[in-house]
Image 1 (spheres, rainbow, N blue to C red):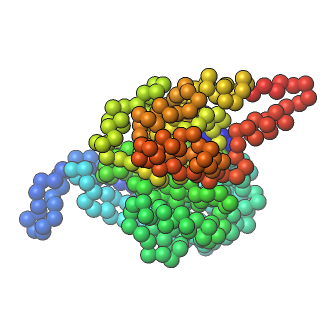
Image 2: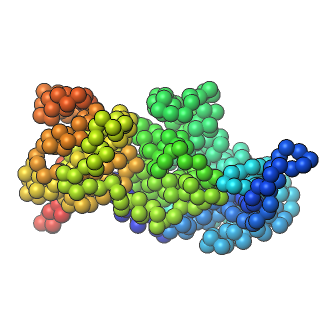
Image 3: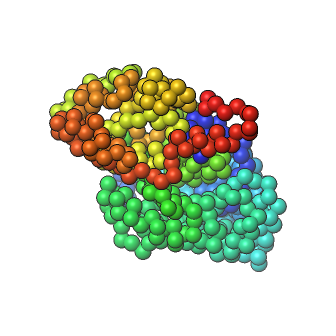
Length: 499
């Protein structure tokens, strides 16, 4: 298990990933409006530029390359100018095109978007929707190449946009080869139940796709939507046959469901009110999630990496790929980490801050999935989550001379990389009473291993008008137990230190 997101970003580089799916040409026609047409009340657009980009499975491959991986794309396109433009766009991004043959019976899927004044005015779609079949040789060509590639890759992604490459026959063939696939296989499909027999490592439906799968009318965007979906995780897992369901909720972030674990919520970074013409953030999420799982990351770390990667493309016009440099900046925790005992003035103005503050604290030495789950659930209790972190000297007093394993700066940096955490503040005292006095949180969260009677901070929180929330802990997750297991793996007479 690894929840060191900066370190995880380094570990995913170099992985070889097979992408099977619908490669799409995204064409953007940019211009400026010059009033309404005389012949009809529609905008007249003066053309300024045309740009061709990779969409669908091709965009997944581009995002894998941007994250440092080695993608291998298998798809099927037509023998037409759009196919040539798509291959040119792939080669420009460093993605090979040997697995994207042309078939005379197909038309390359193209989505043309007319853009003006920062808005999309119109989208024109064309291209094949017929499934691959043995009759025209397209299915045979794809499966023969996939047969050779499966033993050579670290992960497989199925990117099904509904244009025929991943139709029923392809899904059935993949199911017969599941034992030859690498352990990490992720499905991003408009119809994820179609791939239940694949026993996927994860499926990534968006909100509408999940509703269709659940045959559910849905809930309007907002907190109520996430709360309701949290109750449906077991059903989603059952219907998809997957080990995990990563449900993306656009501006509301994402939710990760996994067997026998509480749901994990990630949060959208940046201003949720910002409108953009971004296309393909879901492809970015899928690419990053797959790489993290293939690198051996815990599910919570994989979901956080995927959410962070997707956030780097939001606000960028066109079909965007992850900016690895921006992702590293996010993981640096810039703006989230405060000096010892320091809080910003606007946060100390309890009457004027206008947002419900949740506070929790701990050592967070060897941050693990249980920590991440509890922090994610704590965030749901308010608008801002502030995390107090014990200093190194304080940890030594509380845990012994061999602790902490991870120094304070690194513990804060990893916490700051989590989307649910808004501010990280270290403190030197054995109890965060001074921080609570200054912050006056509306909610104080601690683990369920405490009781109201054994929590020394509880009287102060309640005297200041706040409430205490004891969060049930996740079973079988403990830093002390992790360290004990590490010691147990050390050979007799070998190094047994925790540093």
